[in-house]
Every structure is written in structure tokens, then in C-alpha cells.
Image 1 (cartoon, rainbow, N blue to C red):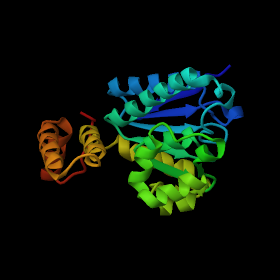
Image 2: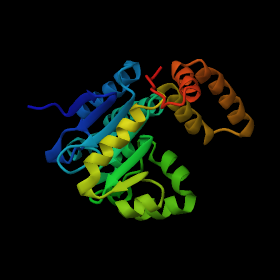
Image 3: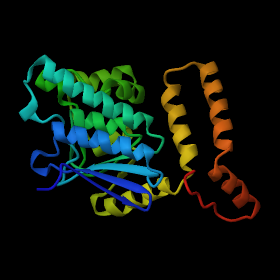
Length: 257
């Protein structure tokens, strides 16, 4: 029996595949635990310079496993705590994370995609905030990222009606960073992930943190955070390589430290 999460590293990219295709990759207890452990491990592995999360079998993730719903408030609290851990680990991971969405991303599956730094999608992708239709409230920090991306009233329109967003509309709204035809998806996804992995990992990680914090702080706080970040990345080997490459009129070859 295959594991619920497949993992492989290829040229600096950690590919994580939610692997419960018969359940449209719904988030079981096992899958949530494996995903959290994989993200936490990636943070400590210098060989990982970018992460891609995707689903097997033509679906990204159908959300919570219905077989594990209706387990009472104590059970729900435990599920939400694991979700909190995953979302926090993704936000704090000092490397770019891409959600590669094909097919449905529903409920907590939509939340998982939003918790990644960038979402890419093909023509089959559908983003469905099903919470209202099943009598639930959004979770996994869905509201945190959603309202910051779309604005308050547009977010209310989508969440209170529970309407699905096809890939093209999600791209137009700014939720999806890249929208590719299905026939071109694999090639474009690999090239996109490789371009992130080939980048200056330290600087990208610091930039990610600055952007995440910027939505919560004032101008003075942003200026202070940027100053500390600039001093930090100036000492990185990737920055030294960029300076040398500029002086020598050649492409920079970043090694991620």
C-alpha cells in the first residue's frame, strides 16, 4: 500500500504529492501528520530550495476527510491544531512553496493552497470554499490569506455564497499566479519550480518573511524589518556570488546559502 504522501527531491525541488486519489486526496489524520513532518523536515534540509505541493489522480485536495467529520468538538479541535501547525510551518519555511492545483481544491484543500506562497493551476482547477454549504466556518487560516488577497467585500461575496472559482477567474482575481493549459502544465510547472530552486534561497526566504509580516505591520515596522533583512542577506554567499557575477558579466550561479 502506497503512503498517503509521496516525497522526492529533484534538483533542489521537494515534490510533495497528496496520495489518496480514491478520496480525492482528502486530509486524513495520517496525511496531515505526514505533510506537517515533511514541511518541518524541509526547513532543515539545505538540499531543499523550493517545495511543490500537488495532488494525485486529477484532484488537488477535497478538504477534510468526511469519514473523520462529526467526531465532536474535542476531535475537531485536534484536527484544527494540526492544521494550525501545517499552515504555520508553511508560512515560516524560509523557502518558496508552490501549490500546483489540478482538479478541485475544496474546503481545507483550498486553505492549503492559500497557505502556500504561490498557486499555479491548469484548466481543470476549481477552487471551492464549501464551508457555508456544509455548515462549517473557514479554517486553516483561510480568511487570513483570502481577505488580504481579494479585499473584504469580494471575499464576503465568495465565502458567504460558497460559489466555486474556476481557474481562469481565480487567476483574474489574483489568487493564481500562473494559469497554464493542461497540455502544457507539467513542463511549465517543472520550469517554474526549477527557477525558484535556482534562485538565491536566503534572499527569497527573507523576502517571503518580509511580505508575510508586511500585511500586519505599519510603515515604520516594515522599514525596520527590511533594514535587518538587508544586513542579513548581505552576508550570504549567494549575494557575494551575485556581486561577482555582475562584475564578471556572467549569469549568477546561486547555491542557496
